[in-house]
Length: 525
Image 1 (cartoon, rainbow, N blue to C red):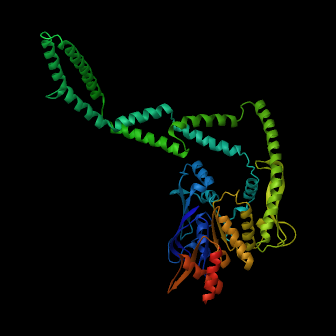
Image 2 (tube, one colour; image 1 turned 135 degrees about the vertical axis):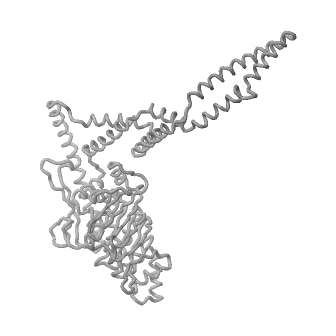
Image 3 (spheres, rainbow, N blue to C red; image 1 turned 90 degrees about the vertical axis):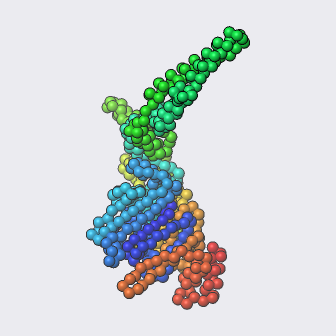
């Protein structure tokens, strides 16, 4: 989910840092206060068009940083791993535009192209409204959403092979084995403690053989004394034999210690080499989310899978495989077509029902399946979302529906129905309340609250019925001084929410009655 948004010198915002929460939140405030500017700033960070007009007057550049938690965004994490970036924990998107209109983009501090920024952003946030960053208007996104709703994912062999190829290349370049890992750790442990080992060996030699009161000489003296005394008392013979045996073993131990002390040496250069090698192995293991000892097995499995996916060398074999694969493709595509047809019918009915609650009476949602001659990687048909009954009786593609407000509410209806299948963890709705009020506004608030139970939802709204349903609420206001105008955001506590809802209900003059009404709306939410 979106955790933090930092904005500097963007339109009316001089500097703003916002920490986001989970669930359903709203942005409210007077018209012109700059609510949509925050949405524009996020869209800019996600890869939307940039120009010098976004820079606050008198400044040299504008900058927006958006930080995301990747726990609920596996697609983004996989994209990062595929592009040799860290796909664990948090992701920071940074976008800068200067006075010449040139923009730069970064992911976790690494420079990337704007296209790469857009690719990873598509799996993080969907913005619904007039400021369109709307995946639902793209045909491939419509197909993916329908297939996910039907629980019928496509086997993307080309994508799998490409991913396997770079993974195998990386492990081969590492040149790592399980035996090396054991040897690396043993040698590193020895070199890391070389000073202690040398000192310990020298100390032991001093005590046993080389010191003034060395044990070896004292034990030898005891052995000789007992041997002489045993002539007077044979019972001491056994003791003398034991002491002599101890002297012999002690002598062997001293010899081994001397050989060890001669062999052990300090080698900081080799230790540094081992550190680098171990860190390289650990880095690859973290990337592939396994233990270092598991890497050789991964390489073997991936090579075997690549061999299965590889093309045969002979033409006859390749021709036979093409025919067999085509037959398998047609069988899978036919099953997929049947699954899509059932899902398209169900999705059309369910979305149409929700649309009736959103002041889109008479509107009907359809999912068109357009045949593709010969089929393609996605099956035998293209998917097209259509709307009928709004701007005429004939179904029209969703992308051609003119009203931004209608698109927002239709998108809301689709998101509610497909919330279990959709994968984007953060949804932002801008102007979903255009042209509605009363009971419909309450429905919008309820639907957004339901969505917020599963994903992070942020809504820019003028409607108190929507704002009252939120788990949390921010107020945007504009501060005007001589030669200085900027927008600011306040996090509202319980009492401040009462005042803001009352303002939205009653206009300029807030009365005790409007405050009472606001409290009642918040209590019922």
